[in-house]
Amino acid sequence: GAGVSQTPSNKVTEKGKYVELRCDPISGHTALYWYRQSLGQGPEFLIYFQGTGAADDSGLPNDRFFAVRPEGSVSTLKIQRTERGDSAVYLCASSRAGFGTGELFFGEGSRLTVL
Amino acid sequence: TQLLEQSPQFLSIQEGENLTVYCNSSSVFSSLQWYRQEPGEGPVLLVTVVTGGEVKKLKRLTFQFGDARKDSSLHITAAQPGDTGLYLCASTRPGTSYGKLTFGQGTILTVHP
Image (cartoon, rainbow over all chains, first blue to last red; front, side, top):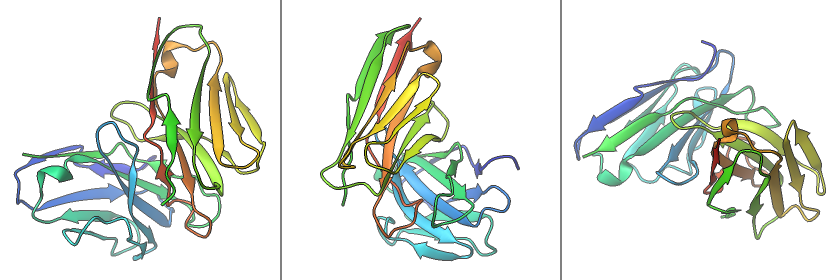
């Protein structure tokens, strides 16, 4: 596709449920990033993939959050036992390279609401 | 953790006015980026500044990087309603991935016709 694609665009779930958010990066981009943006705040880094491996997962808030990128392209962010505090917009970005000056291209985000 | 402080948090002005948004940190930036984000969209990169004292211009937008690389400003001349949006500054720490960004909380700009 022309840009980073994220699905679903909106997800409403109940506290305690399991959620998966999908990111399809720009073709050929090897680096993929997940960020979380709460209302009125700037995005916060969650995890970075270079190819298939998680190069830096230091931003994941706890072990309920997990992300995979099995074939080095599409990535899935998984959230177990969701809590109301997980409500936010989850942004995915991709770039040509993880190091250097490759520009990050962001998707439109997946808005998660936990009731 | 490097914290980025942006000011003002909110800015509401009339079309044609000038404005400046500031981004400050207690630590030295390795590089600094400015993004613009519209509702329902992801942030879009406007500019990257790397060298202390650097000035970059993008049409009516002027970006400055402080000599000590601890502060930056975005100046918009003759603002237009199309400039409305959330303006974010972001930086990386030396030795980390370029894409592992720390963002400021943003400045919400509203330009009234």
